[in-house]
Length: 513
Image (cartoon, rainbow, N blue to C red; front, side):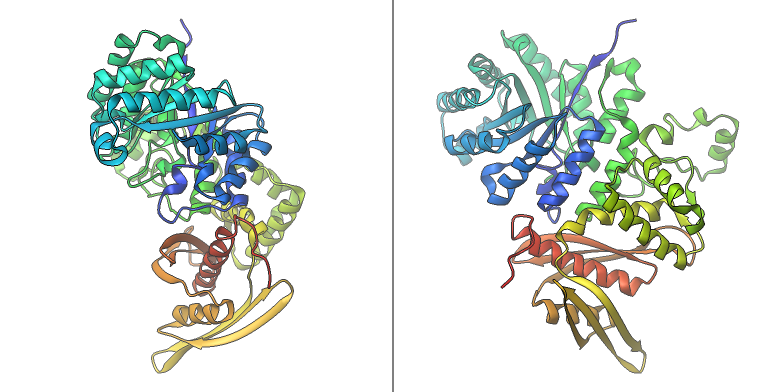
């Protein structure tokens, strides 16, 4: 039996995923995600859009210098300075790619670029040729390809392949295509582009109609060799094709798709958890593959079938994606060795310093809770990512509230060894805490969203507070964890303050006055 085709996985969590409102990441966080993607064995990491900002450039350059086992791609418009900046950002990577794009659809030609068809082809060809001066690995994307006239799209694709594009990506930029239609478009290109065998055809599908994964798989059936996707389906508007869904679809239905990937699927669940923690965007409970309910069976007939044979209602095993078989850690008496083994079983790799700090937090939590669950351990590890960019630290807080009392909070914060204490009143204890933090830090952020949930079951469960704040029109998400939901609320707001401070300084701690 012939081996299935190997499909390249191009992950754009650090570029398109980060463009989701409130999902911006600082440099340290991007590096952590990049390391996880490397462990996941994605083929290409699109690390960012270097021309967009100095912070974006620094992040792409850092990823290019750090990651060894993946191709590192940088995005650029069909503009000289964009391509030069992208080339500079990925220069130190031994496996570097420049990804150039130019809009081709009629609506984009008329209203955005204001260029004729021949001008679009000229721009595209010249940009690809320029990119080949810096690397042999050049990708070209005709933006809004799914709404481009097929004849013109074929003309563009043939021209950029002739110019040196080794990958041509066909984006469904606004999520407009239907699966059958998109598959037909890929087949059309294979039939009408004479030199198409000299390149890899890729697809980049958005989820505006909920069809990103379906369109991507239809393209694979039609001959595409690369899928562009993101962890948890993050991305602009309704997001992109979810990596975990396209990968597990190919693994589970290899018989139908005749395709597979190099992905280490046991790393999918940890990767999903990490990205959720860093971006502050929770995974919905019924999300395919990585949602909390993905392997839950409540209906009696389902439970009966599962007890008889798990294959009656499960088409994949939880351990296939890295969901641990054991969900419980028996408190602090498990010891340091047991804790370290649990970290490994969850798919995480920590430095000695990070492990020491995580174990100390585990001991503190185990003193508060009778049982510590995997979700609690994951939350502790998730918090390790942000340690390098902590500007303000919560040292203590006290609140007073009641039906006949004015809600008051006293908050103690520290920064670079200096401790500052202040108090404030508010419309409830959480509001009072936030006002006290605003007074101490001088950060006037607008709270736009607040949510609270129990991380695990039981009355001693950790509370997870997720918030969204607005800083000068830019959205930031953050979360806080504690068995005390008031403390969790304080941690979330302070994490947002730190995120804003580091994001406005290229992912580094801001200079002190």
